[in-house]
Image (cartoon, rainbow, N blue to C red; front, side):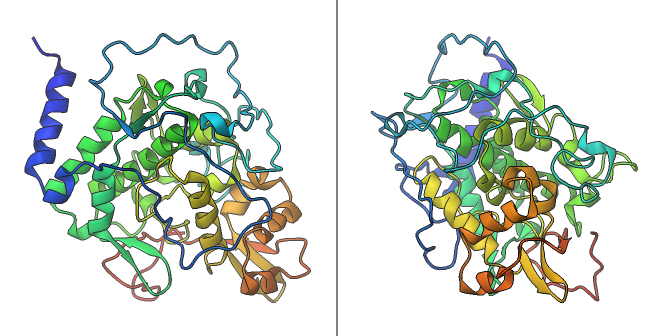
Length: 389
């Protein structure tokens, strides 16, 4: 008798084929796509290089395509293995000059509100610490890719880019059929064996899984003004980010914080991932208008950094100095650990206006963040509709 998983996968494909035409078409190629930045970002001081894995011909991963995945042995230590740049095999290289460290286990994010912490590792923000050694296993020579065409179609239908440069999602207009397609896409992602993917394909997988699941959570609770209104209990001040079992990969139940701070941060150790993960908030870096893929991944991360850093959501000039997004407070260790290191990171991507904001500055005078939902149904209404912060 067919297994329940097989029946479910068949059911998902039936929904995909019977739903909107956009979702029924699988991508035939994985060309370079834009990260949504306005204009072309300049060449940065430490440019990254990228080569696809040898033999990568765009083979699409299907859970049923491999009846017996290769046997893997778990890593002997629960610490991320530093990745040496190896462009010939398609390995993802951390940003030049960023030192890899082995972070210690920190307190749970559920202890205090998400904006109450100081630097990374303080109460309110989880430390970067590998949640399970199984998630650092990869195959650098793999040519398998994961199909993200359903997520691409969803974004193309419901994303709106305003004059302010903020990408918004029209949550209220998402049809029941498209919500079901999104859930099937998420279920398909959770059936992927990430160990058989190369490192670039893995990062694209985690970025899309996090962003799509965040949108799914909002849709399940819509209408709301902020994702922080989504709570499992009254004492949950941080929203759904620490809820266990938000996704399950390789049989491991994971929260959104597990994905970000237990996998992506410690394994890739690259501050630019903070410009690719989206928490469904106005103050967050933009939700990419297209799915992340291994193709041109490095350039797109640079583009996302350039776009956010030069927006008014990242830096503001005040009477007492420069104020910055709380992302640079919560994850300060990821950007070098000091105000000066954060500002040096910013200078790598800053345009002329941003450089004027931070000219001569070595310290950050304060922080801000806007938790209002990145909703495309309305313009920002601070007076009419209060915002949870």
